Length: 127
Image (cartoon, rainbow, N blue to C red; front, side, top):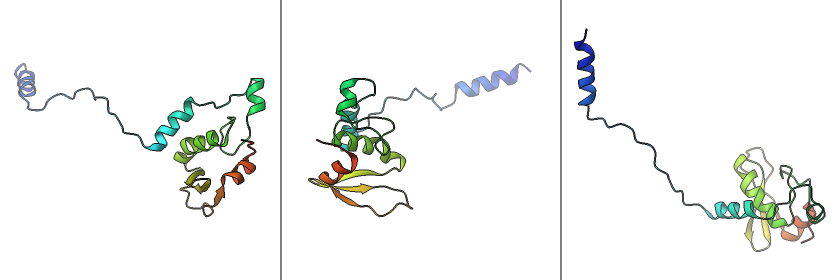
């Protein structure tokens, strides 16, 4: 009875298998979208409540998740970073001043193309 646990312990100690070490921190090299998302998170996204943010920003935008945005660029960055990864539509700049609606949903309408001025008018931005 005493011999069996000792044999198991000896076999375990002589095993060539090494114990698992704690995982090391992995650094992921980000894409350009990642860097713009990091900038957008630190940017001037307007939170409701202050008079200045209420008058200078646009609310009730599609897929804005309750946020307000002062510029079209802030809104488009938000869509790329937050809507794109969950299969909601977002706008990708395909050449200066021209954007293409992007989505990965299979039942979505065909991607449309719009100019910056058209997007500003559509979403209610002045600048």
